[in-house]
Image (cartoon, rainbow, N blue to C red; front, side, top):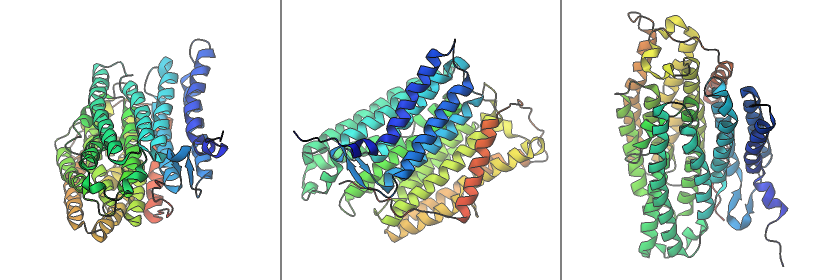
Length: 472
């Protein structure tokens, strides 16, 4: 009897096994430690496990391998997305240095590692079953993480996310069932079969599938969950889900989009809602008084930019989307790190009013926050500006000039929202708002690391060439 699972198959998913197994180590150490393991021990194990997973994944770059009979496709695409996910998890985990109860930290770390494992699985998933497995592993842990704070808003956000995300998963699963009915296979490669355009199951299944993807990417009008969940969830969890869910879902969408025949009409409505998200997300930012909600709506618009880069399914578009995702990771998590430095257990720093007079009180923090917000707005010369220029080039070359126009309009609107925070920090007529003096060395280090990488990406815009999504 032939052996269908080989040593190479297990090597392909070793980074996932390290991350998922590391969560069990964290829980075992907490179980064996008298009372509960200290916060520093859980965080150290978690960060160490993520570093090991990222290091092993890096060694597989440049290799292409079809693992588990097409269930997991190893290649440059999967490795780059896995590295972005792992780095996002490390930076988010560092924010737990001052948040959450000590006796819950082992459980929180384990849940975050399992959620990271799900996103890493989505990065390499090449069939419908693996996609759903990764998505649910990512989401189930996030439901719990959203509700770990002893606040009513935290439990409310977990319940909202559970209900709405489960509904979206139902759309996704129903779409997968219809696609299976149309193709007779669960592999994404089957979408390349000729004659599918004449099958109504293909159009219905693809539509339901894309509704689920739009929800996970927070694209309008499927974004309504994100502001409330972002606001209610603990700050480090909000930072984590703002990047990792987008990274994992964008990887799935890219594999789906690049598996379709070139110029497939199925994706046109998806690009339309991406354009709507660029405008609507930035407009909604203008009315926000909570920075977590502001960054939630910012994420709606930023997701629209990333999806726009994939219009036309070109090789350059894929490279530019990954570049902008990496830049967004550092810009966004850097802003969350500054909020963490300014916050106590009640997250006072999440209120925009907390930034009043910050330029006088803590000039270095104000300068760092200004840098991150200007980069998110696409202000030159930052990695955010360069990323948007590259996306503009990709969309125009692919024949989607209208998406480029919406990107420019959305960017112009976003400047007003970000400058609202900048004005509060540096307006000489505003009295400084008192805030808690917290000791958050990991958050300081995370903010410094994010700032350094944004600067590096500005002057050295590396876009790996071996990042086309493999499906067969």
